[in-house]
Length: 200
Image (cartoon, rainbow, N blue to C red; front, top):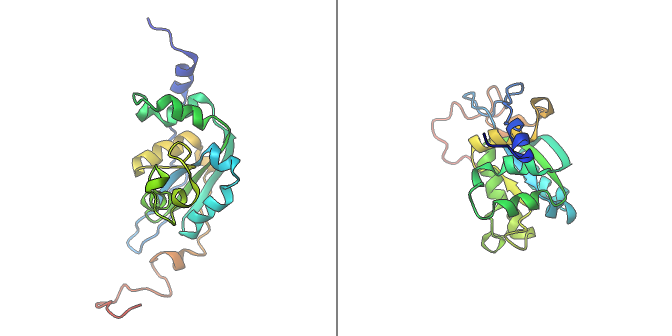
């Protein structure tokens, strides 16, 4: 019988938790719910004091922060986070970098949050990132790329379950929803429009 390493034993306990206590809010007149995405501001972002500037990019885009935590990541959590890359050559380096200093984990919520966050972040290599993206404006090297953003809705659910408990998630205030989304019963809506040409 094979003996488990201490890291593997901890990893078994780090199964992603299902976050059913707080469902994302409705963001479309047809009842469509918002998406959630996990964002990690890596140790380079924290050490360079870019946390506020980066988080404001997501909020400016209309994504709400429903959970936020600064912490030191241990190796077991880093390995669980990068589990899908365990067989890749960069796995060890990526885990070590995540554990190199304080980081900030955030759960974002909004319409199309996963795609919106990834577009804001930009490609892994800052040389390929367009101006206006976080990496295009602030990152300097593909190994110092500041931010992680969930790649898909399934990844987001798994990752959020690793980094947060369901009780950590605080639903965003609904006061702005009518100005961010096409909501049922909004004062301004386009449900009855047959022809939207000319609407600006």
